[in-house]
Amino acid sequence: MVFLVNCDAANTKNSACEGVKLQILGSGGPEIDDGLASSSYLIWVDNKASILIDAGGGSSLNFEKSGAKFNDLQAILLTHLHVDHSVELPVYIKAGYFSGRDVFLPVLGPNEGENFPSTITFVKALFDDRNKNKLNSVYPYLSDNVYQQSSTDFLISAKSYPNTNQIWKSNIADNLNVSALQVFHGKIPAIAWRVDYKQCSISFSGDMNGMSGNLELLAKDSDWLVAHNAVPENAGKITKFLHMPPSKIGEVANNANVKNLVLSHFMNRTRSKKAKTVQQIKEKYKGNIHLSKDLQIFN
Image (tube, rainbow, N blue to C red; front, side, top):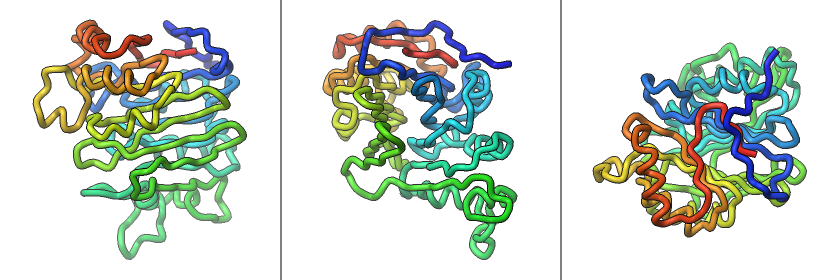
C-alpha cells in the first residue's frame, strides 16, 4: 500500500488555495550523482493528482510513492524537451495501460526551434508507427495511444505552444485552466506554465534566463512560483544565457508579486550554496522562500 508522503510540508494560510497541494516529484537536474530525481511537479486538487508538470528521470517512481493515480491526471505539461524534463513521458504512457484509463490525456509543450521538434512531433516520433517512411518511431508498440485502434485504451492529445509571444491559455476542466508563455532558455524552445484552479495560482519557470520579462507577466500575483536554481550567482556568461542566477530569481519573484517562492532544479554547483542563494534572493524579494526536496508537499 502506498501513502501520500508529506515530508516537511510547508503550510500557508491561504483560503484561495484550499484543497490544492503542490508536490515536488523531482528537484534535481540532469546529473546522476546528486541523489535527486530530475525536474517534475504534481498539482493535487481535492486529494487527486491533477496536473503533472515535466517528466524528468526518476519522477515516475516518486509519482508512485506519492500515492498518485494515473487515471486522475488531467494533463501533462512540458516546459521544454531536454531529457531531464521529458524523458519519462513513455514510462507514464505505458503505465497507463495497466491503470484502466479510458479518457484522453492532453500533453502540452513547446513548439519547434533549433534542433528541437515541436511537442506534437515529439510525441509522434515516440509512438506513431505511421511515420515509417519518414522516421521510425521509438516505441511503435505504443502507437495505439496516438491514434484509435482496436487495442486503444486511451489517447494522447498532443499540442504545441503556437509561435507567438502572447499568453496561450487552455481550459482543462471546470475551474482548472493552464497558461503558457515563451521564455528564453538559450536557443532551446521553452515555455513557462501557470496553473489556475478557481482563485489559486501556481506558476513554473522551467529552465530560463529571465531576460525576456515574460515570466513576470505570466506569474503576476501567483500564490506560488517554482523557480529553477541551476546556477550560482557567479556563473559564467554562457551558463547565465541558459539559467537565472539567484539575483534574477529574486528580481522576477519581486516584479511578479508572488506570495511564495519555491526553489528547485538544484545541481551540484548550487546544492552546497543554498543558504547563500536565499540571502541573495532576499536582497530583491521579501516574500516566503522555500527550498524543495523530492516528495515534499506544499499545502
